[in-house]
Length: 87
Image (cartoon, rainbow, N blue to C red; front, side):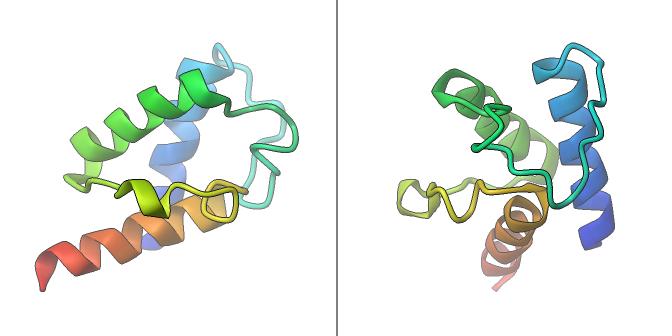
């Protein structure tokens, strides 16, 4: 799994599911929480998508503003958890 693939898949999910197909200029550094892209309801769906798509479960203690700040941080978290699963 490559980081760029994770970013693109997360972006695709957010655009299609949360932003109703409107890209809105979403990129790796777009502040997801600050701009209101992700709220608590969308977070549940996003975590479910991550589990299904990447076979990674994000532990509750890892769900923080830092990890959800943007696609880059979220992708890093997914990669970190995927790496931990392989060990």
